[in-house]
Length: 229
Ligand SMILES: C[S@@+](CC[C@H](N)C(=O)[O-])C[C@H]1O[C@@H](n2cnc3c(N)ncnc32)[C@H](O)[C@@H]1O
Image (tube, rainbow, N blue to C red; front, side, top):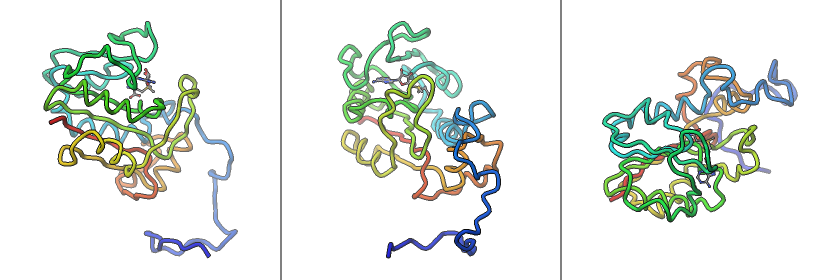
């Protein structure tokens, strides 16, 4: 018989067949927009809290992917703001390219790279992390987030969603490039957060105290602060 971990929750689970699924008894989610169509998406709760707690790193020359929303929102003392997009001619982008192969981006260029929810789209993800380390200036910081348990399709990027991550894998991935004492990797989520997120519910649908409980078996995202020596 399959060996199971003891449940963290000491309450006795319902008998087999007696679970009250209520509104969750449905094969299709409530929403298909990660919660963006309701209020704050649950993964963004963790991601934005992480960026806020590292706002002091978002300074000097900053590179962000797709747009500069987090550079503007959390940055202080930003002297240059670049935006990288995979597609040419994306409005607001100052650079175009594939992070897995970007020799045109000069080495040692950025004091901070804000790399949220992007690595899942890159097949050669290890090469992308090497690029990010290369383009960081000495002492520069990468603030990254990647999805774990998550819906894996959206209108724009479904075709290239390649990966979902665990904090274990992310520690190995970044640990191959950054020194361990300069690396802080943290998983976020629990079964309630994961269930609500998969249904496209929002932070406002739950209690943030519930989101703050961490269960390593149910990470919905992982955040990374990595500093280049
Ligand atoms: C959903 S957006 C994520 C970025 C956004 N800042 C955020 O926090 O949601 C996905 C981004 O991944 C970028 N992307 C996809 N493949 C890429 C690649 N190979 N190299 C660099 N960027 C890539 C696209 O430019 C796109 O802007």
